[in-house]
Image (cartoon, rainbow, N blue to C red; front, side):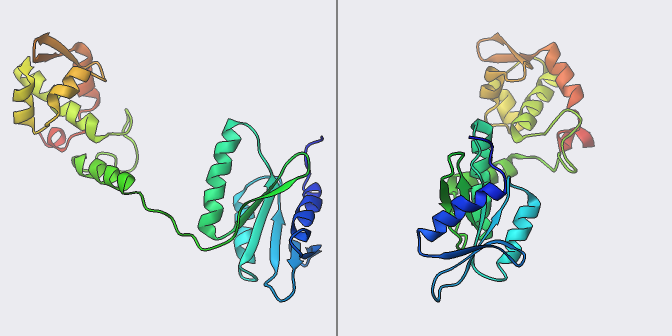
Length: 228
């Protein structure tokens, strides 16, 4: 079947609503589709070939007429499109809008209905974000990423370990942890995600040339470094 056009969305959406007992008419005033059923509040559907900010603006404006507002778009295909579909469905729910998709074979499907947005809070995500906030020393990313990227709490801990080794030479993980306050110092040096550390002896770690360069590149990532 040929790719759907905006006008070809109308018939499938009309059929969908008519199966639910609505009388449907197109191009009523500024509205693409309007449906009525007895004394129920009217249903409004805005037809577009894809998601856009202007489509959401238009649909939200229709909420001033009725609570039953849908947007209808061709059903996208492909992995990227499916991800975008998931995000746009979530946005519709947040805005109190319904979403209808029309397949290439002409079948219209309701993805979500209009209604108040009641998000479920994730305690796990909240705790993770709070830990990331508390782990950051100072505000190293003010105004966006640094010249070498985003400074994370993990990066700052690695910098603190590297700074210690640069000053005192190869050291035991326990000594680095005790003097820097980085409790996971041994694990960070052993994991060596940035290539900054090397194990000199069992339990003793030193700084590599890449680590020396890393300290120069990320010199301003720790409040102590900028003040010292």
